[in-house]
Image (tube, rainbow, N blue to C red; front, side, top):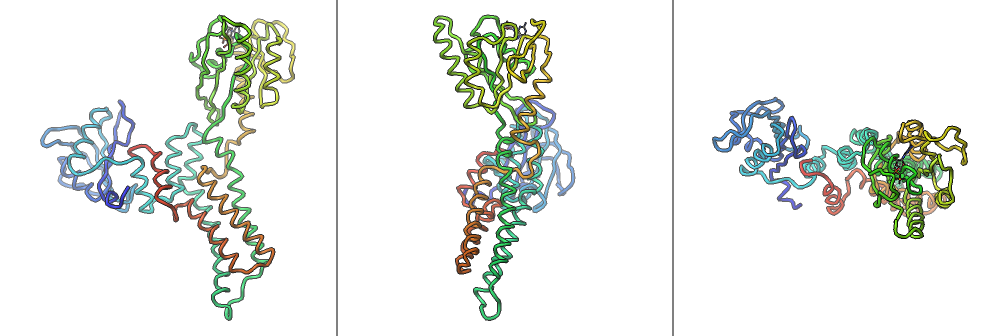
Length: 447
Ligand code: GDP
């Protein structure tokens, strides 16, 4: 995006294209009010007031709408903004957008509204990234965690750490610049300050793994030999008929994936396609291959066997492959067994027919998921932010080592500056166009 474009007035449909109660068209920039007055039957559009009117294309009535006018800087983008709430049909929102574009706006790029909000200092970069997280959250839990960052939880923490490093840096600089008047800070003081800041950064980084899991979710694979009920379990967990279930072994030939919300987003993988009828040797080969692949990729494995037949050689062979990974052993078809004897400790009992044991299995899965990632994480960070934190940490660590060796404070100052710059990138005080464009290119149009 070049500088000239930034001052152009932009517009986009901000609600998903589909049939719904309401559709929203957003306009932002200098000409927003002028355009809105041209395309409506309103004589005025007082900022901060809810206005009712008609959208007109020349004199043709397009829709009856509610108009929300915002004067800069009191708007989402910090510019003059007009939001038009119309009836939520695909064609009506498109018609209104066309009229807006015909009258002087250009179509917004992905994330351009939020980018302008950032450039106009309505949000810092970590809050802008939280907007995207919130929109794309796969679970209600991650949405709540993202809202914390939107409210500035991460930004405040970064500002606090920066403040501490800055304070120490200022004292070093004063000692360097005015050696006659200001004494250099004691090395013991520097060691104490740097250690404290390192601890604070470590606290945020400690949540990095949980953040990644909350953001991306975990993979749970259902593994077992043909016909033990993998597809039936897949369907039962999702409460739908996604995978085809038959008593013909090998019905499901592809790996099927679906999402399940267990507080953390779970991608459930049905690996049922492990049989080829023509060549029984190849069956086992493929089955074992699938099991190996799943064992590698999955964070948790549900190892399923048929309680009615008990563990067969083939079951045992598959179990050998997955047993060192995080797994739950599930004995299915328990409805066919009168007196079940556990062959592997802590086996979950299940009947996908009667759903007996299904809630208990979900609870076991939830416990595993929570062990991998606690539901509540103090600080949610993304990879970019984690990289910045790591760079800042490395620079601070160098400063600490130098202070311990009582090296020249001029040298320590250079590392502190690097530590501060890396933190500035998180909030966006220092950022290149490339990084910025990369962040906002992932947004939706209209956000
Ligand atoms: P997969 O090949 O491992 O995916 O197994 P399916 O889910 O396709 O099931 C194989 C057969 O076992 C089908 O006929 C199912 O109806 C049957 N089945 C699955 N779960 C149960 C169960 O809990 N009890 C009984 N009695 N049969 C089941």
